[in-house]
Image 1: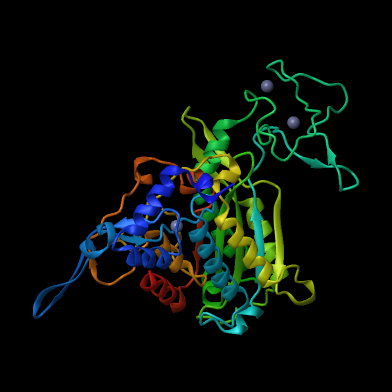
Image 2: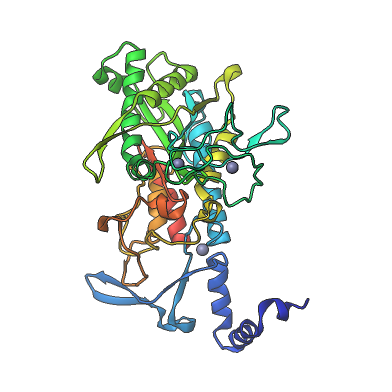
Amino acid sequence: MTAAAVLGPRTVEEIVTRAGRPGFDRWAQQVERCGHCARPVRLRGRVVHHSAAGRQLTYSTDVEPDRVLLVRCGNRRAAACPSCSYEYAGDMWQLLYAGAAGGRKGVPESIRAHPLVFATLTAPGFGPVHTTRTDRTGNGSARCRPARGKPRLCTHGRPSWCNAVHAEDDPRLGQPICADCYDYPAHVAFNWHAPELWRRFTIAVRRSLARQAGLTAAEFGRRGRVSFVKVAEFQRRGVVHFHALIRLDGPGDFEPPRIGIDALGLAEAIRRAGAHVRLTVDMPDGSGLVLRFGDQLDTQTVNAGPAGELTPEHAARYIAKYATKSAEDFGLGDRRGSPRPRCRSSKSASTPHGSSGWPGSSANTRRTTGCGAGSTCSASADTSPQRAAGTPPRWVQSGGSGAHTASGRPPSTCASWARTRATRR
Ligand SMILES: [Zn+2]
Ligand SMILES: [Zn+2]
Ligand SMILES: [Zn+2]
C-alpha cells in the first residue's frame, strides 16, 4: 500500500498545498515546537507590553502562517493526543519519582526515608456484574458467576448466575447481571461524591496517625504532615477508584516526621481510615445514603527497607500510567468535558486538582490551563461548560484520566517546573 493510499486524496492535496506555501518553514517549525501535537490549539492574538514609555506591540499572530500560533493541546489521554499524553506521563513520572525517592527537582534524597505507601481505594459493590476470573491454577480463565447450589432467578425473573468465560474484549464485562437489581443510584452517587469521600479519608488518616502516636490532632500537626498525590480511575464497571501515594512528612519542608511511625504504621492508619470513613448524602427520592469505600483496600509500602514492597520507580510508574489512561479504555468514547487550555487564567474552575504538596502539584494545575506566560495575552481558545452548571466531576467524563490531586506543602520546584514548560511552549 502506498503512502498516498493510506492518507487519502484530500489529505495528500492538503500536504502538497501546505508544502507549496511561502510560510512552510515557519509552519513546520511551529508543528515541531508543539511536539507534533495531534490537536494543537490555534491561538490568534497579540502581545502588548505596557511600560512607562507607553504601549508597545511585541508580537502578533498576524505574521504567522494562517495567522495562528500552534500550542500543544496538553491532553493527557493517549487516544486524544499521543504526543501530549506521552509528555505528560514523562513529566508525571519525574515529579512523582522526585517525591518518592528525592535527588531531583530540588527534593533532597533524605525524602526516601519518609514513610511512603501506595494505596488503592475501591468502591463497594452495587450489585453483581459480569467479570473475568482466573481458575484455580491461576493460569486459565474461569466462569463468570457459576451458580452455587440450586440455581435461582432474581426477583425480576432473570438468572442470577453467568456460566460464560468472558474474553477481555467482551462488551458485557462490567455490565450488571440484572440491570434492575443493580443499584444505579448508589453507583452514580458514589462517583459524584467520591471527591468528598476522599477528603474525609485524608482527614481520617491524620486522625488515625495521631491516635496511633498517642497525640492530639494539634500535636500531630506540629510534628507531622500527610502529603499525597492521587489519581482517580474508572473500573470496568464504571465506578471511580483511587490510586494514591501517601507520605508522612515533618512539619517543615522536606523535614522527616517527628513521630515514631514507619511505613507499616502508615499503611495501617490508611487501612483503618479507609475502612471507617463514611459520608451520608441526600438522594433525589428524599432518602439518605451512606457512602463508604469497598473492602478491597490495598496498601503497599514503598522504600521501607526489607519490608518495602514497591520501589519508588514502580510506584511513580503506576500513578503516571493511571493518570494518562484513556477514557476509551472504559468505553466512554472520546469526550471532552474539561476546559481546553485557556490563557489569562492560572486556575481552572472545574478541575479537581488540589492545592499543593507533592512535588508537581501546582505544576499539574498549571498544565491544564496551558498558558503560564507573564505578558498579557489576548488570545482566544475554546472552552467547554464548567462543573458549576452541574456537570459531573471531571473523571466521570474523562475516564478518570484527569483527576489527580496532591496535598501538603508546595515545594518551589513545582512552580518553576511549570514555568519552564510554559516558556518552552
Ligand atoms: Zn496535543
Ligand atoms: Zn458473565
Ligand atoms: Zn433482577
